[in-house]
Length: 496
Ligand code: NAD
Image (cartoon, rainbow, N blue to C red; front, side, top):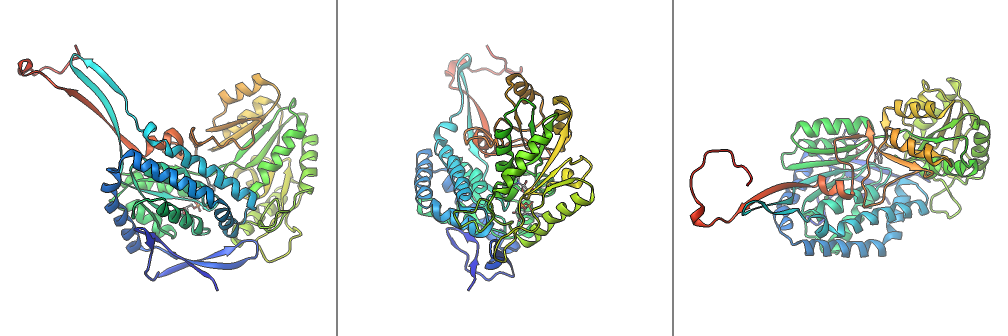
């Protein structure tokens, strides 16, 4: 028996019959565990209409009441976090401890959104001119669309949905069709927390659903996370339809290791950040830049740690790395390993035949050394357990390499030299920088976002920039004059 996974519209499961559906796999067994309904234009209209109907009431709901729903949601999410992690592992494949980490980072964003009353306070200038006060108010946009990738099926929705609704918007969430179930549990928990029907709707599907949201008149803004080509497409089409869009794209994250670094710590970090979640993280380290003369020693240390990694079903407590999300993705990643070999990179650890039982989508951790910047291993986002080591002659060469990348999501430098680290933080053209921290995902009260082809738009996700994205401000200039102060004056008003 496979499960039917359907839309959540206006506070309840959708009762219709879908024209198209997609298969949802258990990546550790390769079996189909469910079929997800794909939205057509009719369901896009239904979901947006439900959100539009809910908007006036939700916008006028007090800050105190909105924030109470978020506190209640936070409690329910904390109580049910293991169940959510199990759903993530079952459809994405990442190991349970990693799924639990994803949920914990998502909860951080809910906690931030609970502070909406504080965040939405405007400024007030008494007596900006004589007898005139000026202040600002932040108002919601209306219906917003959130489009999520497969690799964080709970955390990425939680980057946006709590902040969007805290600001008084209503939401249509379009999760990845590869692992759609986590979003449904989030919607159920929101309903249980007292969120009114229609404030959060979950619409499943593919490009058709995305295109429907991009073109819909009643959708005022889009928050997107996914690969760079689709992020660019969403940004261009969403803005063409007059929407506010933030579109976070792909990555190729470099970890620079200077000769003075502690090489054991650096090797630990490279392995953790390269192979955690089988490399399917937008903040995964995919390139280690070893600055001369430490390359050989560092590669040996990384390789020896890789030998000890346990690849297996994410539900098993021994497993440290799970399968890839689909067979097609596994094959695509493996094709990069083949290309790396034929292009002449040095294959240090070959993960193409991992020892794992079962029919899942397996690929073991793979390490290449002496990768050149013209190889597809280096130029493309692989999004799998493949780590490339590039040798650089100096700090300046390493910096130039990072800055020449079209991507600018995350980067890290490993060094014991504070001045070099400080220089790197100043000079590197990347949105999130780790100093001896390999995956520098900012905490919920900062904001998350890359530069260059890793983000289209001008707002980063969550934190203060999230609140900024989900509101538009009005500046109010007010005067309560005495009738004796009247009189016509055609001059441009000046402040006195
Ligand atoms: P994807 O671009 O294939 O899909 C993302 C979303 O867009 C999904 O909901 C999907 O249904 C939809 N979509 C796919 N193709 C589309 C098309 N042609 N037109 C319209 N919509 C389409 O990405 P993915 O494979 O689900 O996720 C992995 C990618 O996401 C990686 O590139 C990764 O780096 C990136 N990512 C980035 C961040 C970040 O914060 N920058 C975070 C997580 C993931």
